Amino acid sequence: MKKYIISLIILSATFHANAMEIEVKSSETKEQFIERTRHQPSITPEQQSFFDKLDLKCEHYSFSPHETKLAAIVKEKNCPQSSVRPQIYLMIIALHRGYLHEVLLKRALSFDNNVQEYNRVALSSDDSKIATFYENIMWENDGRHSQYILKVKKIARKGYDITDKQEIEFPFHFYPTMIAFNKQGTLLIARNEYEFRLFDVQ
Image (cartoon, rainbow, N blue to C red):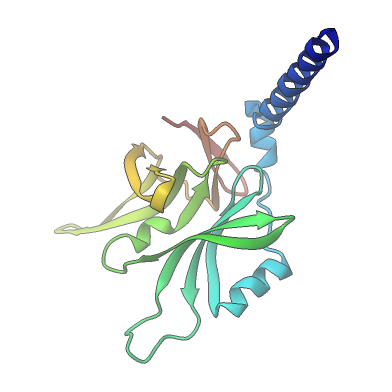
């Protein structure tokens, strides 16, 4: 009986230690987040080959913070004769040891409404949030006007349906080359070669 109790205590301690280790690995300080996002990981030749086999061109992409998933905006390389222009898709792909392993989502983006929103894209660690950035162009009597829009979209696991949106006030005259979530999914960074901005995420 004592052996059984001791074994349970050891098992429980091991479980809690592992849980704490996972929790530590799943979080990062603001400084670590800023440092991690100085350089965006590149698509590897093997990952590029994955898209090539599907006859797709990757236009924009973002790895999740732990690099276990990839969010990609892809375009058909060869436009079908029945189409006026190539179709564009949002894809979320699970990675296994760096290889594109399983397509979790492939959703067509319409030229008429939401394709422009995906000029920059970021995916949270648990893929419960996706962020998008784009320039909204408006034509008025006095000419061309534009504003930069950063959105965080909450997505339901089943079907990856959008359940809520948070629009973040974004400064003009700053166009990011990448956006990314921190490992906790509580902060979003937008940055280019010279500067960055941090935003709280709901």
